[in-house]
Length: 339
Image (cartoon, rainbow, N blue to C red; front, side, top):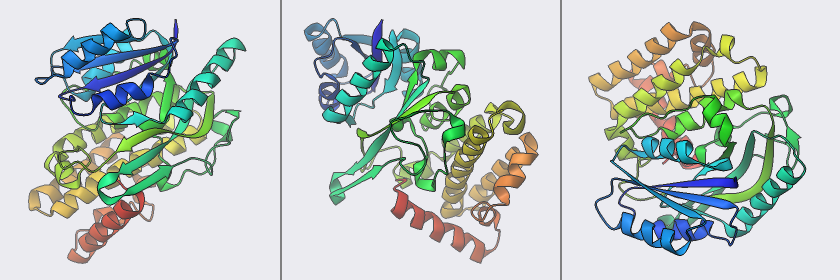
C-alpha cells in the first residue's frame, strides 16, 4: 500500500499541469500520483503518459470520457491505493518543504500505528495578476501539532472554512461515507469538504502552507462573472449539501454539527448574494426558492441560519436590503478572497 494518493484531475491542462506534477514528485516512492485525463482534446493525455513512462512506480494515468471535476475525483477515489487521499487541481501546486513535512508525519503515524481520519493543513491564495498572496491558516480554530477530535476544536472564523485544498482524508473515510460527486457540474469541491466530515473522529492539524491555489484566470470557476453565469450549478450543489443531512438528527457531535451548519450558511450566503447581485426578477425568485427549499428540508437549521446577523439580510426584499447584501458580499470578497 502507498501512504498517500494524490489525484490530479486534468482537462485541457497542457499549459500548466507539469508544474502541478513536479510539485508532487519529491523522490518518495511511497506516494502514488493518479493523473485523471477527463477527456481532454489537447496534449494533456500525451504529457500524462510521458510522466507515467518516466515514473512507472509512482504515476498512473487514467483516461476517461469527459465527466467534469467531480467525476475525475470519483475516479481517483475508486482507484486509490494510498492510506490517505489528496486532490491537487492541475493549475495549482504543493509547497515542497510543507509536503516533505506531511509525508514524514504520515510515515510516523504508520510506524507508531496511530489511527487518524483527517490531516488538515493551510492553503495559500496565489493571485499573480495583483502580486497578492494570502495564507489561510487554522491556528485560532484548531490546536497545532496535536491529535484531536471535534470536541477539541474552537471557533472557526468565516475565513477558516475547511476546503478541499486544506483536507487530506484517510481514503477509507471517503469510501465509508460512499462519497460520489455529481458529474458535469462545477463547485462539487464543496461536497467533498462537507459530507465526509461527519465520519471524521480523529484529526491532526499541521500548520504548514502546503496547497498553493492559483486564482485570477478569467475563465476560472470562482471568477464572479463565471459564478453568476453558472449560478444554477451553484444552487444544485447547495441543495445537495442541504439534502446530505438533517443536521440535528444525523450528526451527533455538537461541535461537528455546529461547524457543518456554519459551512452550509456560508454556501447559502454566497448563492444568495450572487443572485441578489445579478438582480433580475428571475434571480430573486431563485434566491427565495432556495431558502424555501432549506426550510422544507430542515426547519431547525433554517431558523438558526436566518436568525444570524448575516443570514437575515440575505432575504431582504427592499432596494435598501438588496444594496446591503451586495455591499456586504463585495466587502467579504475583498477580505476573504472568494473570487
